Length: 163
Image (cartoon, rainbow, N blue to C red; front, side):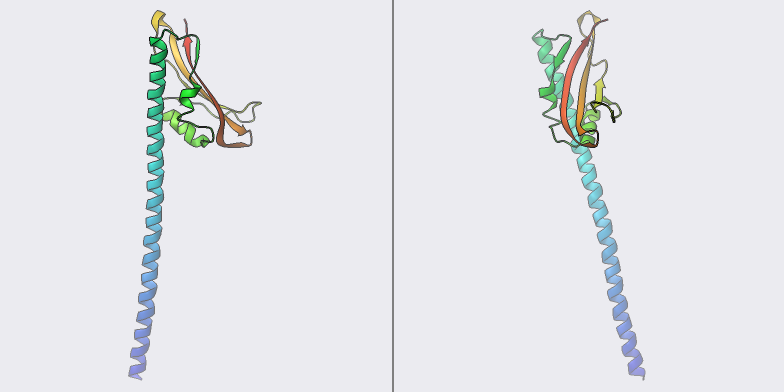
């Protein structure tokens, strides 16, 4: 009888040990996955921030090139510069994050409009001769009113605003 009780206790102890091992493993796996997801989110956030800063530098370079060539006019298209940092097919959320990191004020999405879009601007970008102001504008367009998942097209300009 005593051997039977000891054997049952040993079996219960073994089951309990296996159960505890599985429980601890599951918990550590969940924490590990959560940490990995957080790291990926931070890495993506850092990548978008970096891309935004690169975009701002590219815009600054484009402005300086136009200014040095005395080619700044009322509306100066720089879509070719911006599209390198926000290629067609970029998620809308990522595109907006890149623009914010570059210093743009990103307005609310114009949903249910005839032409849905997101307008973003750097107001008072540079002071030019004759005290004219400049702004940099980027317009992002989705696939449709119902599909804001990715950027379908974009347009960007450096605008000279005379007083």
